[in-house]
Image 1 (cartoon, one colour):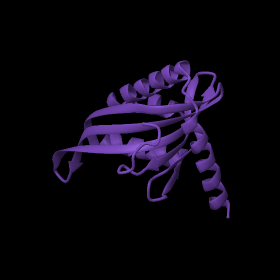
Image 2 (image 1 turned 180 degrees about the vertical axis):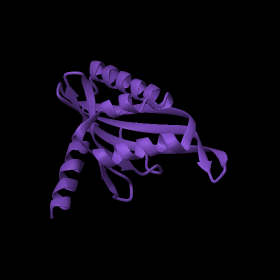
Image 3 (image 1 turned 45 degrees about the vertical axis):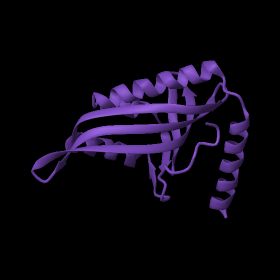
Image 4 (image 1 turned 60 degrees about the horizontal axis):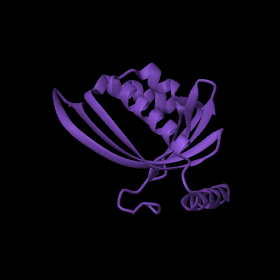
Length: 157
């Protein structure tokens, strides 16, 4: 029942965001935040990457698998050991929100080289997310991230 209520709330919030015009100042702030995140990931500056997350962060992938902040932290640390030549490009598709909380719909493309056995293999990953960010004294923090299907059109594009 809680999942159903959460889904209804998420759809309601998303639907209202589609009808709202974007705030150009909010878009600029969030684009800057995502550019900084991309740079930190590309440079593998994991402490800086992790500082961009709220300690209550949760992510849910397209299949419904959820991870909390400690699990995400562990994944990033494992990534450093198993990858190199990482480039990340986040495109902010749409934003909505207010002074303290914002939602961003993003598309992400990651190019990287991954260790497979005793060799390195070039790879590419493309993902889409709807994310909630909360404002903190030191800037925006990722609070919630929901993976979205790649094959569905953006409703506001």
